[in-house]
Image (cartoon, rainbow, N blue to C red; front, side):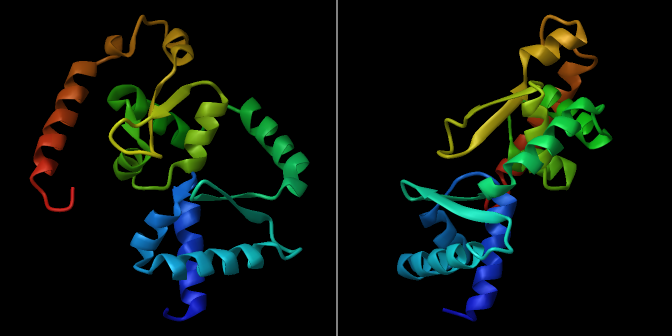
Length: 187
């Protein structure tokens, strides 16, 4: 295995960006390491996170792991989330919600591609507010698809997202984009 600190940093970045449970096998593929090395790397990372000064912990279940906040900080985080939910939606949240409403159901990776930024916290905020729903992606195990919730539709005063302004135009643009990218390698 290369420099252990580099691999630990790569693992941390991967878990942070993914933001949801991820299969150990996928981690090994992405980091280009053998499963045995992957298990050792995860053990070393978990051990580092157990230090008192750290705010995160690694949890695992059925061959999947996830980077989460330590329970010790539950009160602080609950207060932060409560405050965040009482504020108006940010421009970033409105942008993500519009993309999801027009192009959903959409994967987080596709949303991030269109926005050009990590959308984990924005999605979490929208889901906590009941504006976005997620469901398992039938094409990709352990991945999700996001769509506008019925609460969003109700709030907009329409009967369905299809009634949003220029909905057909945006769906047609998405269809063209998908057809164009199907022929690209590694898609």
